[in-house]
Image 1: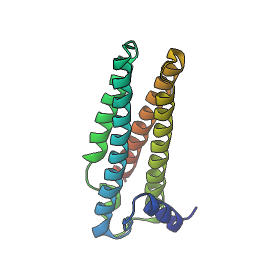
Image 2: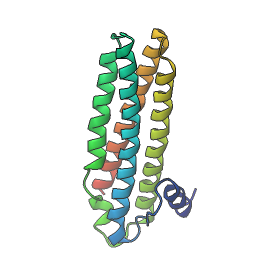
Image 3: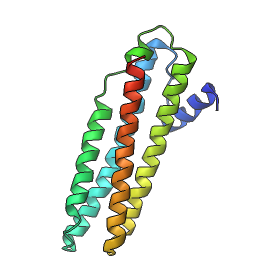
Image 4: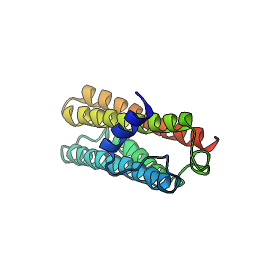
Length: 164
């Protein structure tokens, strides 16, 4: 998939973004991508809070600490995403980023939205497994792993682009 195709795909996920090639708009694009990621994570966290409430109502307490941990991780990651530096020095300080840097940035952004889909799917499994402790425990472990993977990928994106 070429650079233009990646930008088009990203624009379908985050409508109205201009891309990273225009220096003035690149920081706005970066912020829009991060705000969309953060809002998606917030929706997932709200669903998990609903699951926690149901478990509490059913007096099914053993797995609540694990869900609390995941909710806390999501809060931490949302803040990391939302309040990351606006734009990345290596890409946005030059007048025009090279094709390879832009390619990496679009790839990471699209990958992060794929990670969000994985987190949503894992949260859906969690929601669907209420009442079965073994399935619930497995769903929690899977959800935690997908959240951890998202955090690692977001950090990799920051590190890669800030050291350019």
